[in-house]
Length: 611
Image 1 (cartoon, helix red, strand yellow):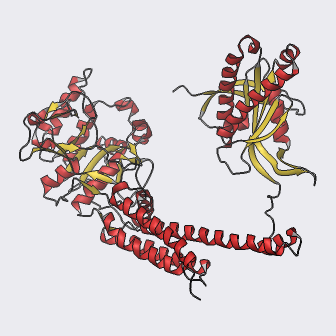
Image 2 (cartoon, rainbow, N blue to C red; image 1 turned 90 degrees about the horizontal axis):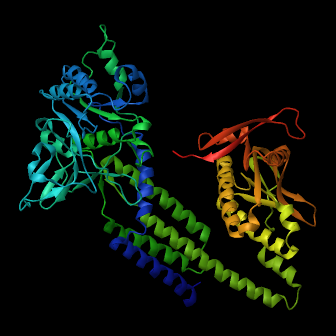
Image 3 (tube, one colour; image 1 turned 120 degrees about the vertical axis):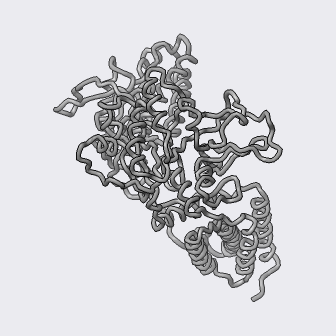
């Protein structure tokens, strides 16, 4: 059966629209590039499991354990630089290939000048010590011609003599020890770091990164571009040594660590302790230590192991081929959407598997843009086919309704059962009760119409707060509101979201009171919260069903709200407080006896953290 012109034209318009989208995206708009980034990140994580780091790069890690173990000897961070000097002196005896200090020494220690002097003495020696510098977004520009080339600052052809940049330099150290390069984090538009600077340009000058400067010193090949795409290694495959463990072992008469474990190695000294703020967002982790990112860049250059992404312009032929194949299938009169979907699914798996395999040869193929375009066309064409079929069904209803009851015809044409609500079930939730204080006196002094209007305005504002924080409005009980978090959708942070909402409800209350002026002087609320299991679902009669929560958790939340009078606007149970962890500050208001419970209930007043 040949396809009708109308059928073919519908799918042709969809084809032209997506081809235009592909052209605009590849031409530079980059609307679909995020698909390749996120999909590529997933493939890199899978590939990295089988891509171990080279064994000649060692991370000397200033971790939380080091901060704790050296507290007595070195004090709080930042440590005296003599600590690093002692370590350098001992480590140099093992003859490592290079030492990289991924630490900033931009300020002189005015309280411990002897410590700085000792550290400077230890920087001299046959083993090169590399130091980081950083390009700053603002600050006092420094003339580039006055800086040593050992910092990776090189004048190119036609370099401006007056070129200057704000830079963070190791000012605490003597200039003859300045060797290194930039460590600026290079992130994409989504704030994820997938690449590393090789150099940055300024008025004819090149400012090499620290890994690139090491490559120049050791004769490693440098890619031609100003940055490289990082080829990530399996997390934890770099050899890690705790700074504190090594430092303390160096002070023992009988050392427990191997005598020459660092011989010929590149030693990178960096921080991973959470409080030292050298954690970055990469495809591998949301908390990737800066030292390990630096180690990855150095290893990529040393091993000639960086990735070579395929240019996005190469995606156009593949995108065009996929779209034309789909257009041809959908244009057929006897076309099966399910078979086409299965074929596209299998093709997608093959394409993703091929891109994953290509990473073994350092090739990064952005296959997700063509696949995304293909799936967009598939669903758009499937929607057009559905709308056409629906139109045909409506025409059939109009035709057969002349002979049959419209409801019978509708059942015949549509097929399938009506959608059913989920059965009631027990779920962990956080229940909130909010009751108005001073409402009785206010209602006695104002006409009913004004009271109703005031309540409606107040409830509208508070319901907006509940919805903004993902809560479910259960019901209004007179001048009280009941809401809960954790159903119908799962919410592992239901207690945090509920307490956040309660705090915002108080803010909304204060704004509302200010609008009421003198009339709102005694208008106040009490809010009680409790977390625990509750039966949630459609509960009621066959004539009317309400989506609600019932159980002891609900009852206790209501009782806690009653305890707020004269204590605090918001009180939460200990169960809620524990689920919130350290998200808020809590004031302990002790044990309270509530109706229906023999044992007292410990209640807490939440507040937003101020630091």
